[in-house]
Length: 454
Image 1 (cartoon, rainbow, N blue to C red):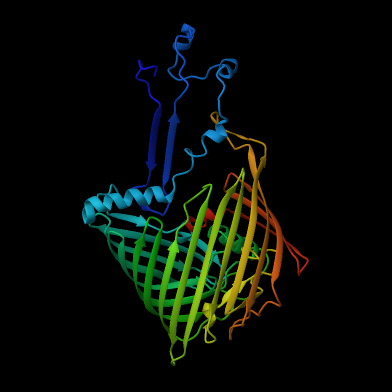
Image 2 (tube, rainbow, N blue to C red; image 1 turned 135 degrees about the horizontal axis):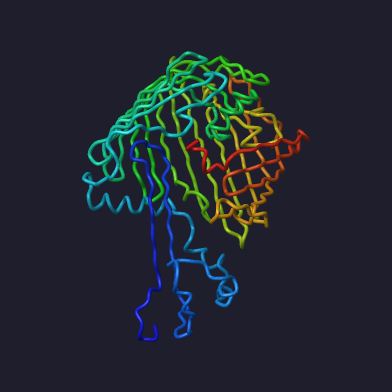
């Protein structure tokens, strides 16, 4: 400064938090960054400013005498976003390029491990209340892994679980699994699992249609760039139907469709471009899967599915476009049908009123921040002064009903007009009006960013 003073102009700090005894897909990262500019010298500052605590707040009148040349909201746009998955994957790739299989880790080799909170405890109408636990055993600096997950349903009195052995080298991974799992027929979730357990147990609102899968598979994955990967999976499964084994505290459960059938040998090819992460300004996520299968008895089928979303900044607002769909051959087994309607797809329609071997869904949402009351959280923090208002339109279509399923084709495209409110980037209230049904549907949930860990 002024070719005389050596003074800081940029500072950063990053704090990473992670549990050493529990393996869950969530980590805490706090990142701070300071850009220091506009030094002014020899102002004759009052000596009282340099007495007392080292860090303190000046009176507002004194703070206002040093105005920001640029509004703070605009100044932090490019430097204060949450840590992106790109950042973490880039660091991981650099470490692997240097150390290879000898890449170091600060985590314990053997830990308890689950994929989400619902792996510990969940409820639905086919299992009742189910409790579970998991363990992870690692070797070779996290290159080799044995992961086990088990659960027991007190309603169906049936044990389930998955055991996976994995070996990784750089961007390549080979995984072998054996499993007995309760699965939902839907390709994509429509509610946070933890909230579904509560709604199912207390009100009889279970947003899933389930079947039992027993099988084994071998999977190869390869990373492409920072955010993408392709995979190939082959295996065999036996599919069984599940009945209702629980009773809710209030209301009644709807029937669970009989989706069981013959055993199937399958091969799946997948390609995915992962999302950037939570609360980012722009994002692009894509996934696609091509599946071929052979049922016992010789019948074969093909199935192509895909989904994705794009988030684009438009001034202070955001445009969110989300799409999903698929197409399959005529011999598609019942448990691989596409489903549509109600919560998570077309609010205002009956839940999963439609389905078939073909399906398409398009959702467009305009996300606008509006002023909102700020609440104090302890002595040093407050909630944001904005609320996200998101009017949206969604349209969907399903055709070619699958034999053995209760889902008919839609009589043309179905349309929902809706409005959503989001607070803190966590809670979402949603209302949807079905243009054909002329009914209003209401839903409360956490935002989709958190579904995978709940």
